Figure 1 (cartoon, rainbow, N blue to C red):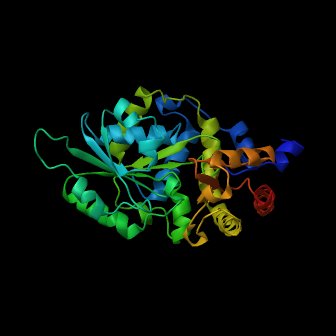
Figure 2: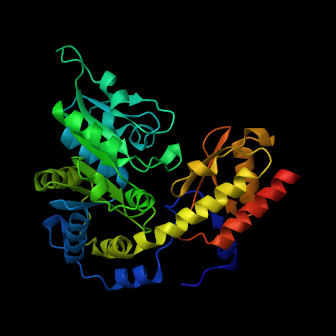
Length: 351
């Protein structure tokens, strides 16, 4: 598909969700073998689910329309109505899923603030409700890896496993919002199966760093996935001949983890360039994956104002609040795109 000169010049650093399907994905989508997935008869979806389960060394997996739906299904399975869910205060499930754990799953979030986005058992244990009949009981711990709004920070496997061991000893399951788990695996030099082995359920996105146009996966035990299929249908996620989307997801799953090191390298280059700009505060040593969160309060502009000036020069970035901005690298942003974004920023900040 031809790309306009305006689009070719655009540097979109808002999120890794903005990637366009590759030519290989488009061809696979056009040629996908399909069937009715609600009946379990779509062969392309079935291959995607089987492959995801195999890669994570779990019994089963389920294709869902979005990561938010996947997380909501997991919470609904693990928790009865009126129970508490412990999560980090900046986590996606708490801030960016429209309170679905309360509105749909019927659960109360118990957020814990951390300095670096890393929940530990030492922080979680005091937040667990005592077993008193008039206190809402803790039913689930939700972890996030990588942590989006903590700047793509990677959850150390030993920290996660300690949480799982102690939570399981108390009869509390652990769900992992692993939207960008392949980024974490690349940063750690380990397999996704190795760094998720003790959690009870996993949601990961095909449509973020892996670059598929649509979709996420739930992974877990066969019993968990059987329940998840029921709730997916209840929540409107039965998608019929969805092999046309699963075909792109298969390519993303099989081929695109190998592209992630380049995204991480570009994020480091971008962070180093940002750190050299007047009024911008970021520590490049803290950038582990493909997400950068940085402070622009000393530039003389709000983050929203700076974002607007960048947009006028065909560089897109997200403003988080008055002081803070976010940039995310992905396979549609080249090294030349990073250079251009930094060049535009230098020009804006020198005016």
